[in-house]
Image 1: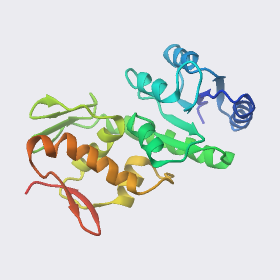
Image 2: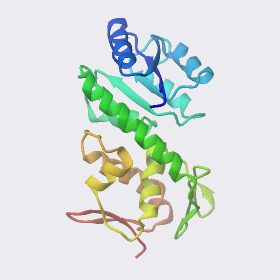
Image 3: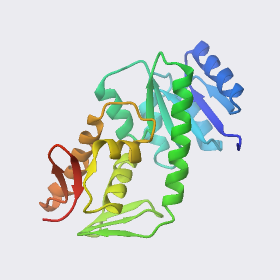
Image 4: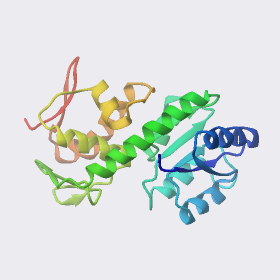
Length: 229
C-alpha cells in the first residue's frame, strides 16, 4: 500500500509513544507532538494523510485545533478522548471530526478506525468529481464543496454537508439510520445511532426552518427521506 503519513497530537507521552510504535509496525509513517499549537503548525506545514487528535491538550485544546484546521483542510481527523458523553462526541463531530475513539482503547479498534477513515476519504474524493445536485431551492456542488439555499450560501459543517450530499443523491428514497451511518459515518462506525437524529435536526434548523418547508421528512419506524410535499 502507499505509505500513509499520520500525525499524533497527544500530550500523554507513554500513550503517544505506544501508538507511534504500533502504527509504525503497521507500515504507517508517524510524527507526534504533545502541544495543540505546535500540532496545528505541523498540520499547516506538513502533508499528512490523517491526524489523531487528543481533546485535552496544552497550548490549544483539541476542539480549537480542529476548528482552525477545518478552515483550510478536510484532512481526516480522529479525536482521542477520555470523555465519553454524547455532548463531547457531538461537539467533536459537529466541529468536523471524522470519528472519535474513547481512551482506553485496543490498538485493533484504532487500526479499524484508521482504515475506515482512509476508505471514506478516498470515496469522498471520488464523489467530488460528480456534477452539481439540485433539489427544490437547494443546490449542492460536490467539487467546490459548497451548498446554497435560494442562492444564499449554507454554512454547513463537513458532516452536515456529507449527510445532505448523500440525501440529495438519493432524493425520494427512504434512508434508514443504519444506511446513513454506513454511508456518511463509515462502515466501521460504532457510536450511538442517535447521532443521525442529531444531525438531521441540525440540517432542518439550517434548511427547513429558514424556508418554512418540509424537505427532510421523517418516516416513522424507518428513517428519513428528502422530498417535497
